[in-house]
Image 1 (cartoon, rainbow over the protein chains, first blue to last red):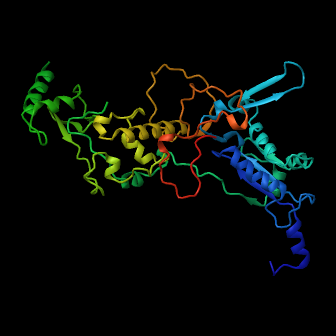
Image 2: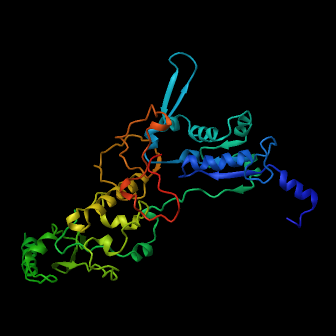
Image 3: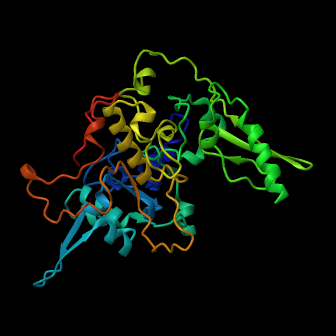
Length: 179
Length: 207
């Protein structure tokens, strides 16, 4: 901004900001892409892989993420402890029950570049299962990012006028009694 | 005893009333309920509304025909299927609950095709959209009635959307396979592949 002084402009360019994302009813993959872009610093014109320009991201309500399709039952997270017979496979539902933050963490981890910077970037990602955030993080937040998916309205959330405004598509026959 | 005989006389006078367009007794039997001696309106789920009034010693049980409000003229009145009549053919989705709720019963089931007048493809599309809406939790008041002593097991509350398959029927994909032969997870239904999309990308059914 032309109205800023030189030092203020310098500070605004190179400061590390804190973003907030509400993951309620959102697919974890879409949230993870937004997180990965900002953790690397790719949303900034001053990006360089070597200059540590990533920002902090706080993801809240990770307990209420929504998978499309039947992924809660079909998606399997596999890991091996390194010991013989240590191959563990958990479905997304089991994983979420065990740890509500794990799915979000794993999806962001897989989207970051596979180098040594990944660990530091993951340290800058803060995931909370509920919407209760500690005070020091709340004080740091600068911007809330819009949710990637539009949450559809339930039938009970429509007002009576909206329901009446929608025309009846078909009329039941004279003698029909609905059971 | 006296009350019962009095009610019987009321019923016989009621039988002579002409109800709506057809004057037969058959319809009034359909909408009747067991008469109770209270001034409570007994509404039937169909097109008849049975109203009881108590005036002194006499109980008057009347059946009013609920006039379904005349819908505005559909854009394409000659078509047989209601969706084609309103030109909504490839334009609805599982989120359009106002549309889908017109074809379901109060406990969530679909109405038969012979009653609604839908053509077979649209009936199937509506069926799958209603299933997806139920699984996404968009129809919270259309759950089936459970008996009073039913104890539900504590289930994990998982948010989902576009689930085409039933939750219990799906098995985890332990071996996904290599990229060229990957076992994909289905999202949404191929019945809705012709839906209007205002973007460049095709809908991705296989994730």
